[in-house]
Length: 372
Ligand code: IPM
Ligand code: MG
Image 1: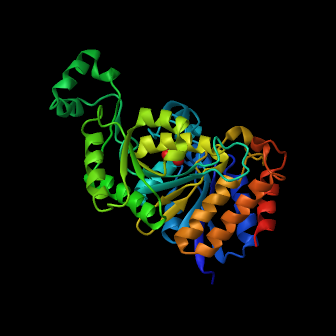
Image 2 (image 1 turned 60 degrees about the vertical axis):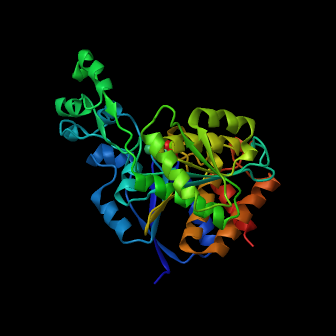
Image 3 (image 1 turned 30 degrees about the vertical axis):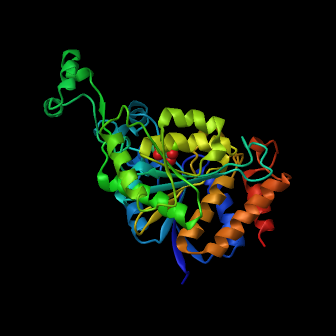
């Protein structure tokens, strides 16, 4: 029997390409695992009306963790239009399977390192080394939404006098997406950020919020962050508004270290920070819960490159590195990161985004050769 059972979910588009690349490196490292293929993604929405079929959830329950390539997500109407004809009038509505997975398995912490590896010509600056902690199950992406606005929900919302003005627009014209945050969720994500900072000698934790406008949710997060921070007197808590941090990240990204944010703000700063260290081709991510984790690069499925083996596999390989770390295979994690760093530094083999002409798989093979 293998030491680990890993759910294997290529998902959509270039998810397949980068997962193949991951496999080259995993095999080269003789990682002792059984890979259990699991269906997820657009194809299963179109043909079965469910992008995350129950059989996949079953597989996840029987594995140690999952590796995931990428997912295609489209807004409601476009999604409905692509359903198989026999499913068209069943009242199905599309919800992103990765967001659902995060909620279903309570993968509350999304950890996203953004490091400027030496020699990466796409680095905005060479001294950037950030780690984002994104709350992953609550907030703006919690999935509690309405359109049209049901009468009952409207009435309940009228507990706040500001609600009254929406009535004259007609409830059939009102869409509502909620931002629901709990003290537990806020505390937990901030604690993860501080624990990571402490364990890794990081200098500061920056809370990204907007409490001057989002007074209740932003206010709660800010209070919880201050409360948690009090337990880490050696690590300062900085507070920044989401709009301001987008500017500061362009001006002085080297001043920041660990960032912590609610779900949507974390999503936004993830892409921003990825852009500073070479783009989504270098941005790895881990969705972590108490006893399960799903590892997926930050990038999407890039349908126009599907099957062309064009995209940069480094994000996926660095994601495998996060998986090694989570499994307690620290030596393998370091070895893989060093090999990735060596290929980047040499700048001899690379994909189109770094100005070279190799395929996704050739880059993975080069990383495999650099493993020592
Ligand atoms: C991400 C992605 C997802 C998200 C999408 C695909 C639902 O943008 O992981 O950052 O917003 O969480
Ligand atoms: Mg995103």
